[in-house]
Image (cartoon, rainbow, N blue to C red; front, side, top):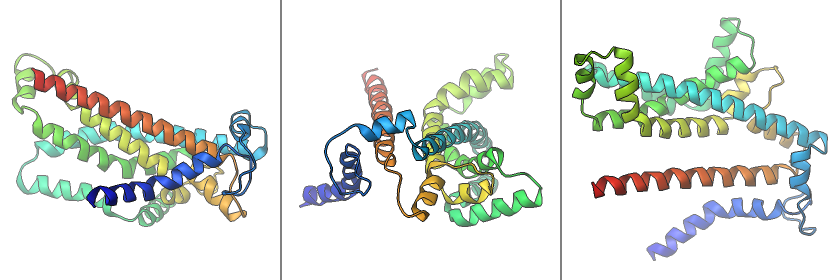
Length: 264
């Protein structure tokens, strides 16, 4: 019974994705209408054969650029913040951990409106800069949560030992802490990248009238026009497969690392 329930949950989760993947191989504009097997939509997507597919590719480029920049900055800031929080004691540490959790629990719509009003107050023109800064704001706490457990597992005397042996704080950070924290940093980077890739509300409010579209805002505009660009189906399929491959590689590397540790 438990296995049947598990398979039912997996079916509900993955059936829509499989459905989109199957119909990405037909040129029917309406989802669910099969007009014959073809790679036409994939060809149209990569060649930019029409205006919609060209705009979709531009939206994808914007999404990847923003997600990459935001996740890199979030990983750096989140790692430094995690080290700072870990070094605190008692009430100060609990307070900072509580404050770190607020952006994750805060609804996206409130975060988006708040940042929009902040940028207006500071007279910052909306565009790539405001979107990236907004994404860094809500992605950094996730990196902190991924790095803190690695700090807890680490021998706290290693950093002090490096300083005692003549290393500067920067050298101790780069050569001692960063290698030990790298698994948490990688996990935080992947999570931040995913969160940024998926965001709509914050992006919508912080992009303003700049004309910059990400995948989420492009799809929203597309739906309001009365339908979805057919090339979205192959793009969603490719993105899902890429994410699946990345997760498999990360999990396999983690499993191999644990196996080596048990062997030693």
